[in-house]
Length: 182
Figure 1 (cartoon, rainbow, N blue to C red):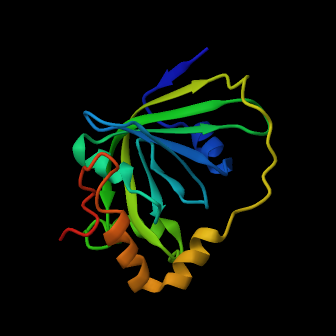
Figure 2 (tube, one colour):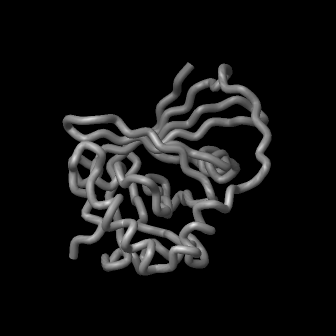
């Protein structure tokens, strides 16, 4: 049975901290819905109604484009071990980039720089939902993949910036991501 909450409780925070993967979902007013898996210990709970994640360079930049369009964002966490649970966070997000004044406020929550880090996604949580998770299978965590950070290190800052210019300035529906705008 689904339960709804207006803020993140300590139990919710503990559950989130224990997860190795989370999913983001966003959509523009018209166009494709995007659903992305994320990992690499990049998610942080910043308060009872604020969360953020450090966004690494990817093959696209859908979330940033969708947030610029309407701000809607959903996160999902699910237990792959232990007690079954699905936790969703519904809210409004924004993109924070190194050029933004808010970068200095939020970036320190994520530790040392990560090769290929692109932006932060900061969300104000409007609602929290938990549900049973009885249908989620068990999976064993084996470790983080290093291909993304290895790729970014090999490219170097100039190579990553060139990749952003080629692949990350527009969504697959042609919406601007704002990544390289001043």
